[in-house]
Length: 319
Ligand code: UDP
Ligand code: MG
Picture (cartoon, rainbow, N blue to C red):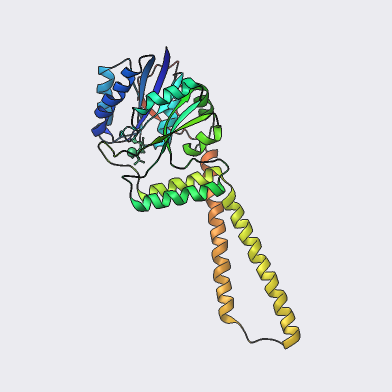
């Protein structure tokens, strides 16, 4: 019998966890050939999430495992901790809010049995999402497609099921600033994509604000691409070229027509444009520098305050 570990990142999900557990258990019971475990990762929730998880763990100690962080470290950290503490032959990641329907897990399992290494969900629509958010996320995919070295599947979700070797590959990447959509694609492996209609959240509310999403998109591009640095370089080169051409033009014109009257406005304009470009380029370099700084500090990605997963099988604190 194969073991399946389902990782469930939870941040302030007290309202929905019982419902999630009920639905996920139904799926687990239906897939009789597999032994399921749910690894709830409480990402420093400030509501009763941990209490609900503890109650579930008491009711169903064989199946409900949990890890609780000392504070909120973000979904990326929660997914990493779940993967490090998982031991199943197959490991899945699923949101707690039931936007990822557990029903799909049966099909995903079938795909793995067919020989795929990864079964991943991709959303087909953006129902239940603000139109500004959809517009920006489409823009993100357009930009990232051009810049980023790895292909980030349009609409890819974190909802997926993977073979052990894929999980081992993912956790072998030591980076601190983790952008899973990029990492999943970077490690490769044979992936089957499932179209997945976006469901409304069963309860509670989304943790993503517009600015958080923008920051996440920027993190993704910077983590997987050096193209922004090249843009700074190319713009610098282009402007130097324009400058040299203009200087030549002035020399020739002065030789032919004699000196011109002073061009005060054009100088001011040039200073603003060049000054702006220099600051812009420095800003881009700064973004990379800030991330290098975070990486070299080698801080743990998360800190665990309690868990019911046996040591032995578990990864060391913090990853
Ligand atoms: N989540 C988390 N830590 C965070 C933010 C979110 O573990 O800091 C979890 C959250 O509990 C949920 C999943 O990540 O299970 C997706 O979050 P959410 O539903 O808010 O995102 P959306 O579906 O709106 O993109
Ligand atoms: Mg959600």
